Length: 395
Ligand SMILES: C[S@@+](CC[C@H](N)C(=O)[O-])C[C@H]1O[C@@H](n2cnc3c(N)ncnc32)[C@H](O)[C@@H]1O
Image (tube, rainbow, N blue to C red; front, side):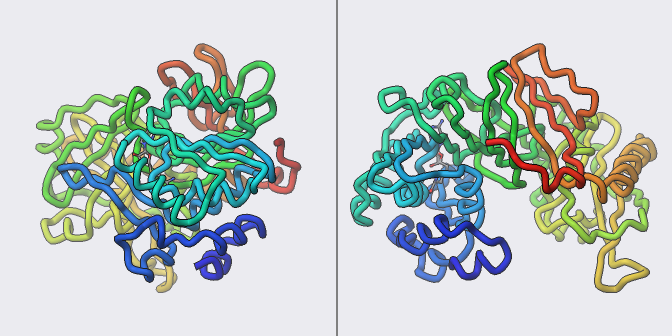
């Protein structure tokens, strides 16, 4: 498993060593050995609707997040979302016998299973606490490192309070439905600044800090998902989302990830994830850009999203397109095309993003790609230029 991950995404030596040491199958006892040692998420609990509520995160992503955390032996660490306990065991291996891991899990049975797995694996420097991670775990604070392994809509005050000065916090932060695992440090003025940001997906945090996403199911194979409290009428959307749609091709080849384009799209009114399987084409709808669906936008008058076809110029690559349905399809196509065009013009120069979390009412930044108001903070996403790629990172 570790060799496989290393072949496409090199892990640091300590993280790779921890992964070789901790037997993942003890933490996912219902999975086959093959599944336990593949680079995939293993779902361990689902709710009555079949939605996953607990899992062992894919080891490749977990390893990348552990590298973002910059752990050293002897550190006290807090994890929010203990799940199976596998990551707590990796953290325990990384901080060694002089360090300590406190992992908070909201579901009592999940916490019990994680405790049993840690015992079976012989881990003695990690403890599972059952509770809502919104409050951290004050008795063992301060922590040199805090890592959340469930999607946070906003950073709770307690995480900042319980992090030691100069400490690093890694959390999958939800920004208008896009999730980035950000490694953050806080400056003296109270602003959190990222020194790395990875594209990822996580189940949302539950409990007091929950901010449910809104799912509008338009058909068996088509759901539109909104985050950050966007308001759209479900019946209107159902009327709008019917064939035939209109397509506009861009001549832009899909030769790199679409992460930056997603951020440009996220500024649109009605930004959403269109969760659609390829089978929607059998009902006359247009193929979404990815296997899970596509990023898009939905308003009272139009539904639009990204699509693709085999390039006419290069049979090995796909060409990006935009499609839209409804009375305002033409204007939706214009807006989507403008974003694709901006992505085409800037994608060579922008190497990634910096994410900042400011106290409420602050954080007016001239070069922001996006500014999102949360309940108690303002999230600012800024471009990281290609020319900065080799600049030293803080933290
Ligand atoms: C993706 S799983 C975590 C994977 C885990 N780190 C592992 O190694 O297996 C997310 C976990 O977060 C838990 N969770 C969700 N909201 C929480 C909260 N507010 N406090 C603590 N745990 C929470 C869920 O019950 C679930 O077990």
